Length: 200
Image 1 (cartoon, rainbow, N blue to C red):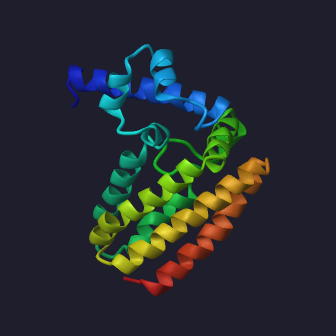
Image 2: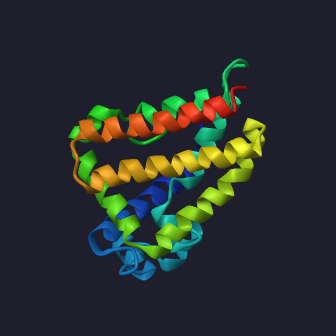
């Protein structure tokens, strides 16, 4: 259980991140400065950098949480469950992996929120570069947990495909049902191929 100090730190971090994300989505990533984020969050610039190493980290603030969740899922899978089978529910059964929501939630305000987030990322070369760096950084831990560097490399490609299909459908303003159908079809096929290549 977290102590009071840890809970307060987590709350401050989340508050800063939420302010930053809202500003990025409204004005564009490159157009927002850390000083402006600090002022809007009513903290100092130093405080922002106490929680986030860079402006890009403010945008991808769930990177460590997502990786930890994926590694935990791999670690806790049953002895007869392949790494790909363990990942399938995370990638297919909800719009946002490891977030407590399901596909029906895309019929709410979540749709526009996620669409704005995707649009902001796609408009920023810095964020696109950061996503590639994240993928590279994930390769080693995923490979060690799954027992195969090759599997990890291919799984990261599947994650990239999912991001492209999901984000593309949102930017085209397709219906929630169409977004889900495209993800399940494209990513499901990719996972099937990965399972065939690494059945164990």
